[in-house]
Amino acid sequence: MGCNLGCNSVRVAPVIDPSPVPDPVPDVIHESTKQPITNSNDSEGKRNSKKRKNSLTKNHIQQIDDNQQSADSLINTQINPMIGNLDKGNDFVEIEVADPQAFHNLFIQQRQHAIDNQSYHLTIQSWRPNSLEQLVNAVKSLSKNKSLIDCHWIIFYWITLNIEYDTVSYFSKNYKDQTAEGVFRTKKGVSAGYTNIYKYLCDQLNMPCENISGYAKGYGFDEREGTPNETDHAWNAVDIDNHWYLIDSTWGAGHLTEQKMFQRELNSYYFFAHPHEMIYHHLPENDKWQLLRKPIKMKQYLQMPKIHPIYFQLNLDLISPRNQAYVDFLPEKSYALLLIQAPSDVQLIADLKLNNKKIE
Image (cartoon, rainbow, N blue to C red; front, side, top):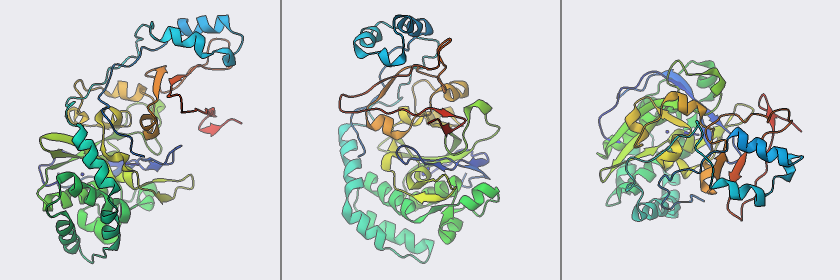
């Protein structure tokens, strides 16, 4: 699922709102909205981008295949020695954060403390504001003398708890009022609406915030369709102590089911998500909001696999293919090779899908 504080606003083109998709772990709301944005187990730790292990080439894969009669015979004792000696493939994309100091230990601890604060949960759940002004007063009262991290969590939590993703608008392409006032009144919105109300509340607390428009790999996304014609999602960037962070309250609020219904499910992963992880499913229209040392381009973005939060939370590492949206069958074989390194206490189960339908 996916989605922003008192400040200047970047140029935001029409957003086609990407809407939420259920995952192995509920996480993505992808939307597409033609409504322009006005105003212009959270595993943490030092996860600054590291150079990825080099990807297997087809020759390496074929060499393994020649020595084995089936995919099941590829065992760790044969694969592990090869990993450290692989050459960088043509699909290698190095991802490094521009500000490695942003997620320092104290920030990580304070973020988790805010998320786990049951007092915030109970207080915010008890609110029944009848107007946007009453909501602002409640946020200001609870935020008094609190850290900026806590202030952002209060806003994020209220939005994800109270704003429903507007599936009717999304599927009909008939978008309602996405201003903060409109979203508060209907308690519904697409990503533009989530983003606008987040920014509005931040503005009232004089906290720096930007609206971001871009592209997201959510509901309806298909990399085979090539470069999108227009932006299809919106989220926020906020400044805390001269460090910029990304927030997506739309995807943090829930996801769409296979029945095209919104299922509310808080996902705090999108509350200050790491830039080098967000780039796998969020590509800002303005390169600077990637918050990466070397921004990637649309072509690379579309080639990168669609990875969900659980991948990072479990410390998985995709060894090969590194930057491909699809895995090719090996020559003259009825299987493909996907190599993922996982911690010893994590077991992986794979499904094979054809045209998004699971093959039994």
